[in-house]
Amino acid sequence: MTSWRGKPLPKPDTVFDVGLQHERTTLAWERTSISLVVAGTIVARWAAEDGLYVHAAVGALMAFTGVGVLVWSGHNYANLHEPLEAGETPVHPYITRVVGWATTIGSFAALTLGIILVIRREFG
Image (cartoon, rainbow, N blue to C red; front, top):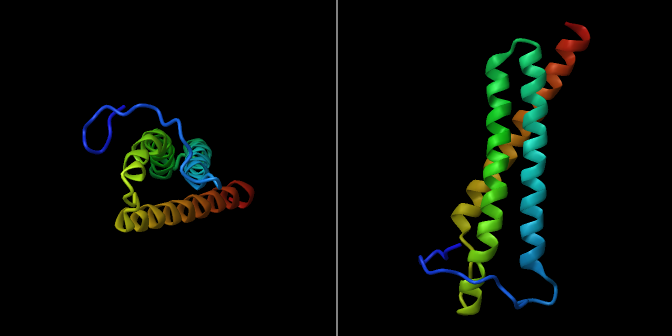
């Protein structure tokens, strides 16, 4: 694993905060990514069974995005230790906003598609 400056990065062995905010944040990203994978897989499966292939592609894209976020969260956990050790802030406000909006929009799209598929299956 390499740092954001391109240097090899050892595994962190110290805790920077007794509240473990850094670790809790990483776990939250991992939970979010697993939720994206599950929701995307369910949407893709239901949509494919009903012949809604565009919706199935959206569900598959959600699942792949969840896998990407899961990989990124593990990599990001190690990368954030370098700025903390240097006394710098690891926060990137722009990226935080982009990821927040993307997650909100993706979750809303999955919920909407899921509701549509359930209604079509029950009443269609």
